[in-house]
Image 1: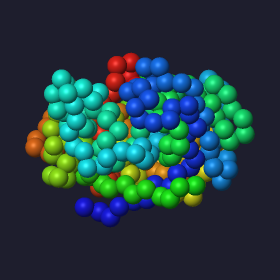
Image 2 (image 1 turned 30 degrees about the horizontal axis):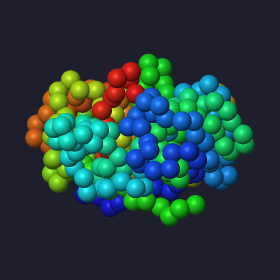
Image 3 (image 1 turned 135 degrees about the vertical axis):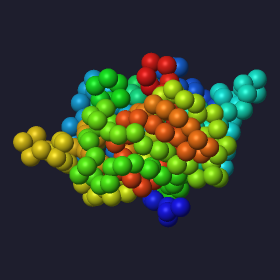
Length: 135
Length: 135
């Protein structure tokens, strides 16, 4: 196996969601609006984001347990244990969150989005456009 | 800014695509079939993947230039310079590839997929199910 790679946060999430217990399992299940707060050194990289764009936000779920390989989906013990690569559990070997959101407003290097289920302070890792066909 | 986080490869891509020049810009533009080769220590995490599943594969694009903040989309100088967070350029601060693929076959910890544009030897970082609504 090759040596590890380092993720450098490009900013962080500012959200009224204070902890994992308060966060919905998926953004479309009632997540509040939130801000993506980019570090100013990445201003050029985010300069072409626009209101109404639909984008993928990748986060580093910094409170995750990276040793977890199987979970009861949605934390419900009635659901049979399932390998984490078949779930969206935050607990997984590389706890990268994948969130599809819509941009509501932009103020400098702050980007307001809806449907982001990440908690306040979650590091931002990347932003990518949603391509034609929803990919 | 918080300290960096380490990505630990969970396996690698086995593909006939030998280098970046040979790879299509997107998987739906003619990428060949490829294998996801999981490290055996993650066998439990991938045990519930199934043929015909559509999943997101996250990779670490290890040949990327992480200092790039703007690019000419698709490498074409006629396209105006664009911030990388509005593109799928592999060159970006955290070079995580996001690939939506379909599972064709599973042999132990080897998973055959179609439409994967990553080159041979690309480290695997994560696999997630595509949710209802294509998210």
